[in-house]
Image (cartoon, rainbow, N blue to C red; front, side):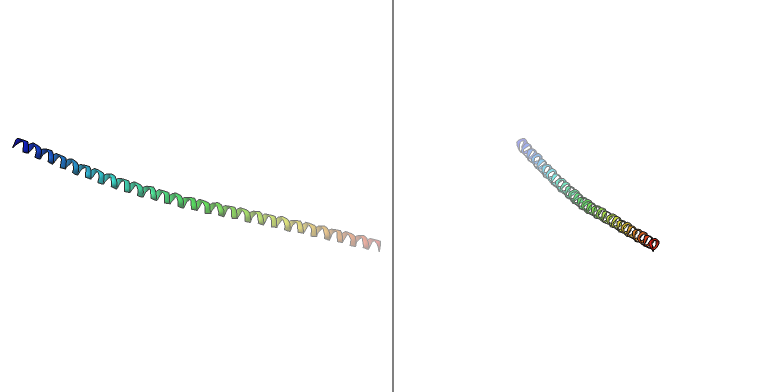
Length: 102
């Protein structure tokens, strides 16, 4: 009788430990799933940030190129105006010289 009670007690303890182990594994599995979700979300956010940074960098490069192009165009227009002004002055000087000769 005592032997049966001890055996029953051992079986009950083994079942309790087995149930505890199963619960521990279940909690660990859930914890791993939650950690994977957190990691996946972090990876997704990092990728979005990288994409946004890349888009911003490209926009900055486009703006800088546009600004350089606009500055080049302004310089070219200034150069053309200077050349036109020089030509007009030279033409005016020639006309004045021609009038003086006449």
